[in-house]
Image (cartoon, rainbow over the protein chains, first blue to last red):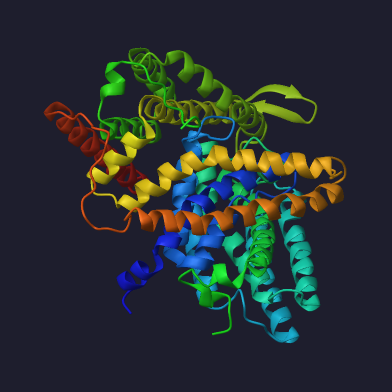
Length: 265
Length: 261
């Protein structure tokens, strides 16, 4: 099957009906989370749902349009500069769709395999933070606080390892969430630095200030902050999306073009 | 479409073709990012965006909204970059262990004025363009019809879904759900709020798909539109010039960035 055929098969009527609903879910769940003052964003649950049920391209389109629509809504919801993060949203949709295609939302692994994988991505995350902290050491402003990112990466890995060991959901959901978080932090950091000067007007600005004062450049400080908040946010998102999909009726799931992403062949 | 920004006021700006406004917005934003002059963004805002807003009879809304949107970010960026801009030397003001530095303040100024330009141009477009007109313009320019459907129906769906979220919140609070307090309490409140919202929305999807099929949405025949767009030769020429200008500026910026390495 060629790529264009595959995309055409993904865009069935039910996919088209799902995308606007998912797009609005992104916004409304994001608002609900902000209302509850939870320390996560959870603003791409809809994008992830589309990506899993209707493939990576449908997911990517949902992500991009979410950001564009979001940025054109009246305040306090909307904010035009948010459109610059469309690239991150595209990455979230595309990657989630690929992970689902590879069976990450259904496949079970042995306990040893899953702990190994979680430790593997945890190490990558920790190495990235370590690399940033080492770069800070060459700066005159260097302070050991640059290593906060490494410490938090270790804590996140410990939590994820515990979840994989406990085994109440597919371990690849946790692994995928952390990988997605790393990727979206990397896409977002240059945009956050160039468009927003590294701040968002929320609590994470304190982390950016901390990293800059301990010797990191603006983009690097944003990356270090993103590598803390994004993997955590995305893996919590994946667990919630996985739970939502488990609770959906088989009759409804079966109507979507990629329902095989969730059921054993 | 009570959630859209659109203000129906008769003016020349409202009558412009949506793509002309989009191209103008693109050119303004590209200029703000590529011209290396401290005051370029504030100049664009005062000399181009505000006069256009006056022409469109929307200057009050544009000014008010850009300022309310920018204030939280402006405070944050001034504090973070004013005090912690990497490599800044010139100290303007010392407070305890922290010092306010000139380079950081300049960086914050560039960012804030750029945000004014981005928000201001974005608002110029959305305040003076009916969302349906924008969708039609994009479809006529070759974008798939499905994209227009998604964007417009999402804008219509949003108030409905927000109302549903609010009624779920009220219903659960009436049953004694705590939404304030420790982090544990707030995490526990999350599931009873999100589950009915998400499953309700997903149930809705099937009905929407049936409605689309019943209206021959997938038909490949050219669809006619109830709304009509006005275009002119002059506008087509202006769009070409603006697009060419934006591309040239981007190429120029990339080239100088590489050469200065």
